[in-house]
Image (cartoon, rainbow, N blue to C red; front, side):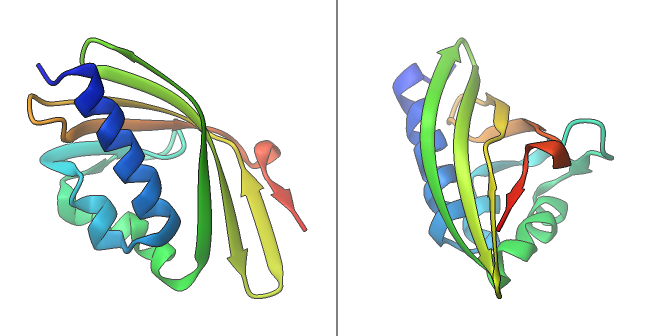
Length: 123
């Protein structure tokens, strides 16, 4: 099992990639057969290729992220963070809670994002 420190490092890399990287950077943090459900209740994406395609929207916008809190237990992390997206004239802020599981190399094996459109602020 990956150490708590390794899992926290992956969470940090994930937020850095979402905040300033590319869809390929984010997808590279996932295991080959990982799953992604964002938000919870939507059809899960399976496999790194589908996950990279999901994150492709990041490639066209400017994001910043801030970790608010993280908890690690075993191979699972839950973390609350803020992401601010600037898309043209709009600024969108959301504070999801993500729950991720990790393999022995601290690669993401599953991600479930807990949020709804009610949690978004658009200016």
